[in-house]
Amino acid sequence: MGIVLGVGACGGGEEPANRAAAKPRVAERILGQRELEHLVLPGGTEFGSGTRGVGNGTLKAVSHHATRPAACVPVLAATNGASEHAPTGSVTRMMLVEQDGLLINLAAYRGQDASRVMAELRTALRTCRKFPVAGTGGVTWSGIRLARQLGEGDQEVAFRGEVHMGSAKDYPIVPNEVHVIRVGTTIATFTSQNVRATAASPVVPRDVVHRQVTALIALSAG
Image (cartoon, rainbow, N blue to C red; front, side, top):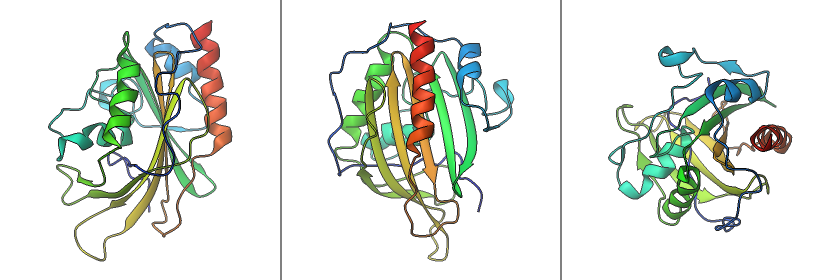
């Protein structure tokens, strides 16, 4: 089974979010589109480019009416590496890590928008447990719960959830784990998917996250 794009993942219950009012360790510099493309980890597959693909510069603000209940919109957005705020630049890459699919999204934001993204997601995860994905013919997310954090970046939120690929009982269910990490004005989202659609929960690889966050910190502070 291929990596599921555009249906994300969700959470809410294992461990409290870290450093809710954390102060950024790096200068509040906004990274440009070319900088994001340069520092995203190599080895991933780029999905198109520009406005005709989802690889570079195509993340958009997600509508507040994108799903119901509305409290789940930040969670739905996070599963796609996005939010309800418009980024100034973005990149999306896909790779396979130990047979699990891994999506990496980097999105740069203006001013305090990155901090707002984290606050809104954290609030949403207090109550969001399941939601449908509009326009997908029955795809839904369920079992949304908080996951253990990796302790990276200025702020982090981690959650898990299962994607039901259709309403019929024989449709596959794809477990996901999502880590959303803020580094200054940039949000890095890592989504690990069990592309074999077995019951095993995927794990976002710590070493990949650490390398990507380290690169973000170095460039943001430079």
